[in-house]
Length: 336
Length: 247
Image 1 (spheres, rainbow over the protein chains, first blue to last red):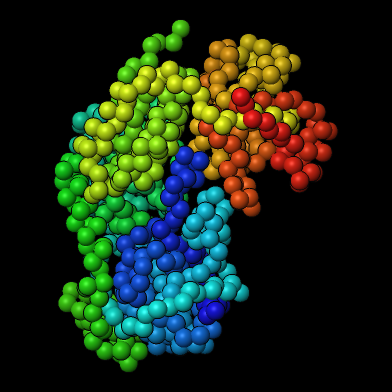
Image 2 (cartoon, each protein chain N blue to C red):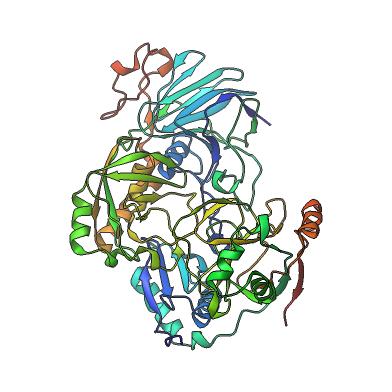
């Protein structure tokens, strides 16, 4: 079986897939890729199922080599990537020859980069999934010397690129009302939507902390709320008034009041917001949320239609920044 | 006296979830209702419903709103709610009685004296009360397999601490508001640490890694520190816990 060998890895490189849903009643959150859209983009570029496992790289990638020829795709937070020293386009698929050295550096914007492989990673499953769940100790971060088996690849297309809207520098986040929204006075809900937030340094796969410009949003009655199920995207307001947006590895229940829930379509933007990045919130109605959700789900399912051949083999391009590969997209790999 | 339970309320929880709340505070009847109603929803197997769970006093459903609309699912839930008096539901079948050896007080339960004082008992009286109480798993949550257990006698309706204990070990037994939590992992807590077990709520190496289920009953039997040390050293048993089916 072909394997990917880890020569070195950043501190937050893990195997991720769609997580293991179905255990919330037993206290185990779903987990899985922090940016589900990036996983879908990698799958579309390789023309394979988005259920296959990929590597998630928080902030920094690593050095890798394969024991046989592989197809790879690079998606999510743009990172500097090279193949035997030659730059590789991001949001694109490539051939990785046997023994070649793939180097993936730090994120240029965003947080989570993804390395998908043709056939997917075939590491051991636990409760039906391969996703590492760092918060509860299922699996672990990868390290030098790890050998990751890869499943049979039924495809052969490489050299595709995908135009991707920037979700790696913060922005506007749509939310809907949730369980405790009504506990917040109307004036506070209005101020919440008018307030710019900056992502705190405290952020991981469980959630990201946001610092408001101005006063916090704490509720005096916050301590008496019955602990209740958490869903990814919930915005908890702890005692200090600085919101926490919860991500796939959040605990399954929480007793802090929730001011709202981020729409699934906008959750990748929150997960990918770099430290210091600016976010603003806007409430939408259930009807508006459903329209946005339908559009997002349809677009995600049709990503492969928008994958088009890169105009030139990126390995032949000495200065990628001078090329606009696809209308509206510049792939972010500078010359060293 | 507890107030009468209100009628169940249906709330949205995110775009892909609905919550059927049987009470806004914990009661035995609301907890039994939440567990029984969850089982009833599971049995219905409505297309579009992807996951269910029960918490202290609510049933949660995660669903695909593109397959099953909020309106249609809400209507189905209202119809199912009307079919029975869920607050009168019996405890679920297939329940088990666990006896989990626990060392109370001392270095293993440094806040026993403080908690006993709040409950108006001496340390010895507290150990007698707590070790003989037949507790029921109300829900599993926060961490994998981690139980919330209730309910202790009314005098144990003691508040949470004002500050948070930075860390208690895995297996720690903590108390507040007539409930125990048995920690699955080392964790910070606002509850008072009164005892220690060597019981593991989540065992990733097992085919079924979740040890307890909502509805199971548990007695936290008192053992001496010396007996506890022996149990800790015995890797073949789960902290010396015994289990038997409940009729």
